[in-house]
Length: 328
Ligand SMILES: NC(=O)c1cnc(OC2CCCC2)nc1N
Image (tube, rainbow, N blue to C red):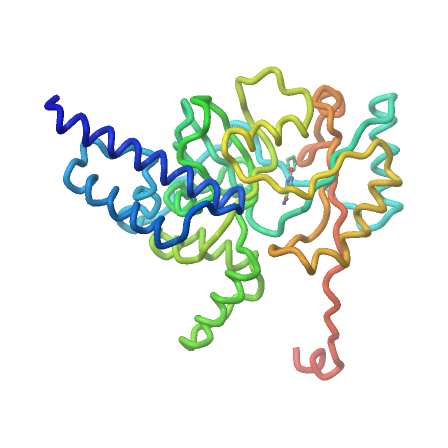
């Protein structure tokens, strides 16, 4: 390879790594290191080099995020590990019932981890040797739809991991409240129907066959579980979350460990009010047994793990006047 070609390849690699680093700071760590203008300038430089030397463009290039042509349809994807649903608890008593069943099953009192129940869409992300190869919706838990092109437009989903590992990560794709508000304002101005809530808006965005539309919806994603990994050193849910964070995924910071259900109840009830201050919608708190071997010991019902449940918040106060009922 002529020296100028090898220096072009080095320049493309350097710019790709530099831009991916800045994107990680901005979208995953929420800690931007350069201005949008500086980022856009570097992106223009990279795009120009890639246009002239396509053979050196990398699979994880930021220019690869907004894919090609719209799809005709979504392909089906069978999940090797089913995407389970969470059981629900609607009050403190039901959380105590869950804790009693867990303690009976373990013959011991476990450590719990509590995390936000993001109100979005469950997705699964497959990486081979560290490269994002496929993303899919939950579907019916066994078969979902391949929405890889749309998921690539979510900036907090890494196209290449910090280590060349083969792993499948589960998470919740969602639309932040700010993006939801701005989108509905735009739709209203265009005389289009507005979305009822951020969850519907996220679902509608990920169901778009044209990735360019999905890219404009400013979706985000929190990783919350590992479906498959070669890393046998992980022994707890907390360690799993730290591991995927180190690999480059965005994880939710409101995660707490408790050694008793009464403290879990206080934590869950504290979020009924506090959730209004979060920049994304949550519809509850997810409670998981932290230790993975204890999870295995408890196992699963037909559709849900016995080692997890969700404390669901009371539905937002919707004052339905009599006339509404008569009209409906
Ligand atoms: N919406 C969420 O934020 C969320 C959903 N699911 C899970 O865990 C799965 C893994 C085991 C069964 C449920 N965790 C979450 N945080």
